[in-house]
Length: 635
Image (cartoon, rainbow, N blue to C red; front, top):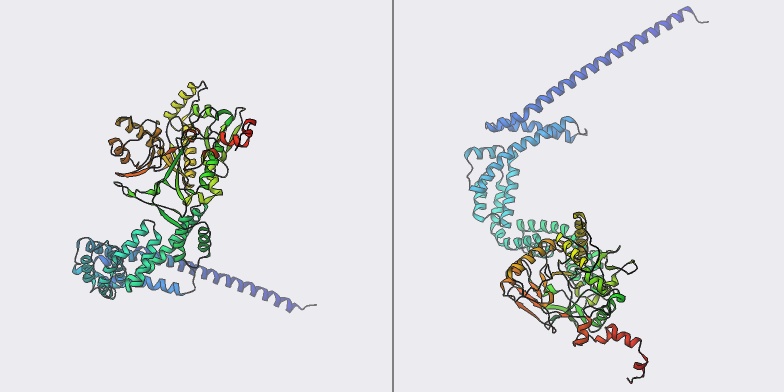
């Protein structure tokens, strides 16, 4: 049993502990209050500094009290440095101080830029006050001035400031603080910089034109020939340009490979391999390109140009009705024979340098050794309903799931028939994929477009909608009304098809808007027709420089009507003729084209190209399925 004294002691101890707890709580409260007072005091002080230091700094600058201004700047600067050198994390006060530093530096820079601009633009000699400002504030001005002087040296190198102006500025600022450390060596290099200007500006011109390879090659030469400022500039630009050029140029080269433009890809990738010699991706692509190229030679002979219209896709409706067209099988066999006879497709535009607006420069073709150049023209791919319906032709073009251009038509039983093998475009595309050496550098052919009734089978304007209505009425078929949204959708479809064709090596030509006889048309007719073609059709196809005259009715190159066409960008003209022929005239190139059809192959001698009996269905079928009488005839 505990004693009474023990109980008394326990009660006393508990009271003592309780009293101590009250004391601790009171002390803690006092500490918190003091801390809060301190925070409030600090915030008030911070607010005072934040609201006052920058205006005080600016006022000191304006009043020429530069020592006071520097003292304010150094106080803030020292606080920022103290924070940066400690392990404290980012806080509100540090953010305020950094902002204040930036504002003070901006005040100084604004005044400096005003002085610099006046010196740069009007040869202003800094006043005594300006010199005092730049000298006494050199802690903030020297770095900016040195940077500006280096920029001026760069301008001189690039040709945007002249030597007398540069030297004037350098000499005017040579006595400012420690700026002479920048001006003195640059003044010694002025002559060297002047010598390098031509090469550097040529490199920059090449770069701005997208010719990165030439730009790099020039800068490599500059680095080899110069030291100091010029070397530093050229070396830096080399690094920048290499970074800029690598991915887009390599992507372009790989796209060329996809489009079988092997010769162009080889040239581009060879240049890249010189600049990036150890790049595995470039070297692998280059190997692929060179495996598809052969030795080439300059060709100076005649250039064959053959022309075909749409193909008869449904022979059950069209083969026996006209001699104007080839069947799909005949066109395929013709390609086989041309290939066997060593012809190679070339781009009609590569024979003319059209980089100048007022004249055209003759360019000799380059072709693989042993090959003969050939241009194929696909004539007037408008797909008007009367022709397509009567002769078994395709009614329109479209794109399949692989983005191949295909022909299509509706069979008599209502079935939609579609495929690459139904039209010359798809047949030629597939043939080149199988025989890439039939195309020199991915060239395909020229597709001429008129505006009568439709383009590729799609009505793309109100004018064509009227033509289509009249055409349907003429053959006794129901009319079709086209809404504005349908016309706009058709334009989008045609534009997408055209984009694929351009990307895969095809070129486009006008065959006039109304498929007119240009030779007999007066100037007003030519102007009206050309304006409609350029307004309604050309926007879907990009810049078009070729005219395929309907029926071969060409206008002489010196005729005012031809001058009008040339002034609108048309500078390559196709007429019509049995023999291969081309001539360069006053700002134009003219070709004759030989029409290939069942009629011409039967009545004209095209044996220089291929044997018609190996192409035309009538001959081939007779050989493959002879009659009894034919079998008895002696061979």
